[in-house]
Image (tube, rainbow, N blue to C red; front, side, top):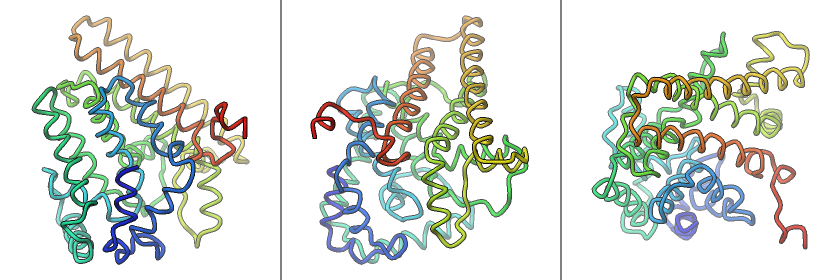
Amino acid sequence: MALLKLLSDDQSANDVVVRGGVTMAGLARQELRPEFEHRFCKANLYMFPYADEERTKLLAASMVMMFLWDGMTLLLLMVAAHSDVHYQTKQKRRQTILINNTKKHLSPNSRFQHHIDSVISGFQTADLAAGNAGREVIDAMSKALCRIRPGFQFRTLRQYLDFRHDNVNANYVLAAVKFSIASDVDLADPRLARYLMLVKDHLGIINDMASYDKELHASKSSDGEQMINIVDVVQRILCLPDVDSAKAMAYAYQLQTEAWMIEELQHLKSEARSEDQEWQYLEATYICAAGHAFFSMTSSRYGGEVARLKGESDEDN
């Protein structure tokens, strides 16, 4: 919340238009409306429950950054200067243009910018204490700059899910899980590839299932904005007669994905080759997937106010 407050108070952010005529500061003020914690904060606690207090704070700040990054330049300003990611020519050109346009207006000496720098520095410092995932979190965040809407229709569900891995920032989540437990496990280990792919599939499917109705409403109210959702893809690929049928089929695939995740964990366990740290990470990713599902189903961010899980204080009002 501190980051949003600093951004909303940053006078120079009033000059940077990021989406539909809304400025950076204006967007931050919109997100600071009541029920902020239900839309942002709880996801961090559900998905990364093993993190200590300091790592929880850093992950919470990074998650706010990721939630805000949706066609705007805020994330770019936060991480581009600190990342080792190298972009291809077209992406590099886009990155440079966005940086120059944003920095032209935003003050480099504002409290907001200093807060961003302190968050990035916090990830780097944490790596000196334990693990090596701080850098991976920063790099995964910067790769969100590459997200674009596809200019084609998906022909297979696998093609869609592979696209969704990047679109839903799944690699950021895997790196964040690793950071939460101060691990240095190798995420590029081929033995873990299938399991991690299934986890990334699950993140995309859950996000789509929870937000379909909200996305459908947005697509109808916008000027032909393309809908990117597994329900829509399944309905088109399988030529299903209605949305309810497509939702049922997508949910069935979600359950199958969860079954495959369990099978793959059992397979890895049967090999008896995994070290304690590796198993700690595998367990943490499974818990993260479950926490993501719970947050998505009970958060007003995706399902609207009707989906929000209410507590005793809500019931009293």
